[in-house]
Length: 99
Image (cartoon, rainbow, N blue to C red; front, side):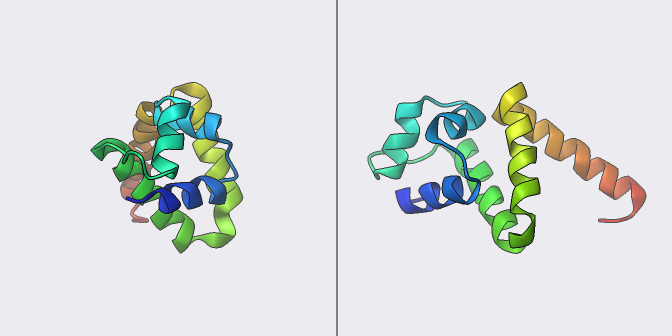
């Protein structure tokens, strides 16, 4: 994943680098290195970034809701919490037969 893609995801979420770094459980300098193409995200971060990009592109009218969801995860525990929340929501959707 190139730096422009990382930056575009962060900008679409309207997040500052510090908040974005907290979400992904990485240092601010790491996000800067990604965006400047001096490093690439590890596999777990890249997976989350690809998923976020996919959702943001598929639901452009839901950016605010997506951002709020991601921010709540960032405030509680970052990437691990976000993964658990997504998993829990997936289970709820499947249990109701809506997914």
